[in-house]
Structure formats: C-alpha cells, structure tokens
Image (cartoon, rainbow, N blue to C red; front, side):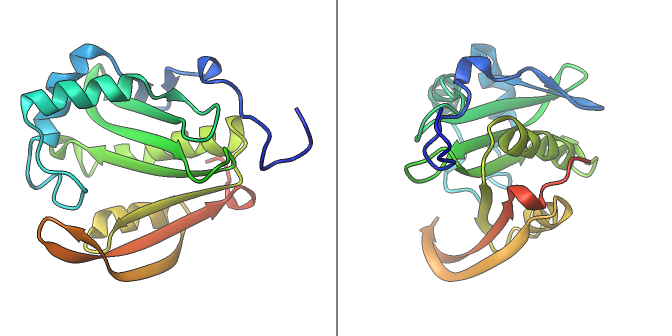
Length: 195
C-alpha cells in the first residue's frame, strides 16, 4: 500500500467481515433463496415509489438477486457490497454500499425496509453498521446518500445518522413519468462517530 488515501486499495471483498451482527440484526450476503422474501417488498408499488425502478416481477427478483450476490465487498472502483438485513431469521430489508468515481475512498449508500417492519429502528441500526464498515473497515473518506426529495422518511434517517443535507437538486431526474427533485446527504469520515 502507498500513502495515497485516494488510490490505496481497500481490503479485498473476500475479507469483508460479514455476516455482521448488531444488537437486533444480522447483515449478511445475498443467497439465491432471498428472491422470494425480497419480492415481497420490492413488488409493492408503494415501496418502490421513490426508487428508480418499477415494482419487481418474480423474474426481476431472480435476476436482481443474482446481481446482488456478486456484490460482496469493496476492493476496487466499481465494487459494491449488498447485504440482506434479518431480524430473528426474518428478512426485514436490505442495505448497500458502492464506490463512486474512480476511487474506493468515496461511496454511496442505499436501503429499503419491508413495510411490515418499518417504525422499529431497523433501518437506523442497519445503516449505522454499514457506515461503520464504510468508514472503519474500508477506510472511506466520504459517503453520500441521494434520495427523492419527497421521501421524508429516508431524509429523517439520514439526519438521525448524522449526515448533512448538502444539496437539493431541482427536477434533475425523470422518474416514473415525472421530473423529480433529489436530496443529497453526505458524511465525512471525521464526522463519523461509532454509536
């Protein structure tokens, strides 16, 4: 390794410390049988309302889970980590971290929670664990979240995590037949504090 924080490779994806457990949750890599549980919520039009995709079909679920199974860690630009979130063996959602640009020092995060399991703090708990990996394990310098400006629950989650709203882009994305606004939240490694 060099002393160049922008170009130093992060630990290889095979070294990712998963499954990761928190007080109530297990964050683990995807498996083929996650297609059914994931379809339960990604097939719901209300769940995907603010996402850049339509409700999943069973065929979509199989294809998307296959892609997510390959996202096993951050090791080079263009790499990603996709994790299923479980509570007591039940899939309650998922989280993801991926690199942005041509370096592993900047990342973006995303999350989705099954509507039957919202309001219990699972997203906050899972995202704290994921940010801990981003900053503590992978040594990222900066992490962002970009979301539909109408998605108030996700904006509140970003704020609970200590992320700062850095921008409000007006009508910058054409999604589901309309121009939508994007909120950009960000956090620097120096701002991250382990709960």
